Image 1 (tube, rainbow, N blue to C red):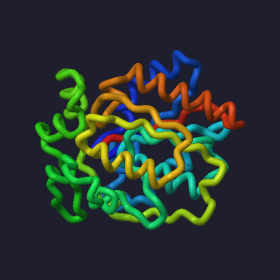
Image 2: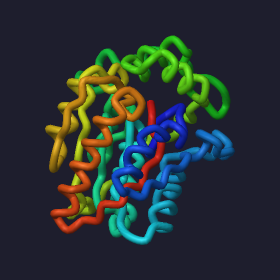
Image 3: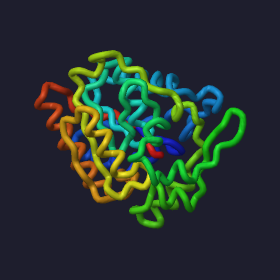
Image 4: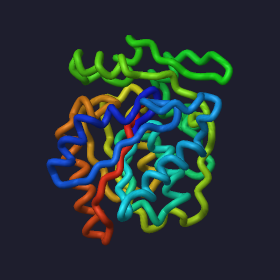
Length: 253
C-alpha cells in the first residue's frame, strides 16, 4: 500500500521486478488519492481499511500486504479486521503501530524528532487536508532518488486528508497472531527517522528485518534491492505455511 500524498502509481517500477519473479501483484489507490475521487470529507482510516480488505477479499488466497509509510497503519488495522485474508505484513519503512496508537502519535515520540514531513506540511481547508511543497517532498520523501524520478513522483502527489493520520488503530488481543511481520529499514529516511524505525521494531514482533541505505521511498530509489528483500520475506513466509502472493498499494508519506 502506498502512503500519504501518493497513489498506486508509485509501485510501478517495483511491480515489474516482482512480476518477473513470478508474483501476482495487485496495486490500488487508497480513498482520495491517486485516481480515486473519494471526497476528502469521507476519507477516514476505517474507509482505507475497508478498501484494503475489499482488495484482499477479491484474491484467491491470503496475501502478503506491503505498506510504505502511512500504509503500515492501514495494513496493521486491516490485518486485525480481516486476518484470514493476510498471509504476512511487510513494513517498507512504514509506521508500525501498537493498539491505541495513531500515525500522529508515532511521529510525536522522541525518536520521531526531525521528521521532515511533519516539519513541512501545510494543513488547511474544511475538511482539512495536508499538502507538501515540492522542495520539501524532494528532501523528505525522495532524497536518494534520481532527479527525474523525484520530479515524476512529485508531479503526481495529491493533498492528503488527515483522517488516517489522527485515528488510532484498534487491535484486539492476539488478533495478529499467526501473521508474520517483516520490516525494511531505510537508514536515510527523513520522514520516519531511523531511531523511530528501530523503536517500532523493538516494540513489535518482526520475523525478519532488512536494512537498505536509502530514503523513504525504496520502491523508487532502490527498487531492485527492495524486490530482493520482498522475495526473501515471501520465501520465509512460505516456509512457515504462508502463501506468497503479493498484494500492494502505493504508500508514501
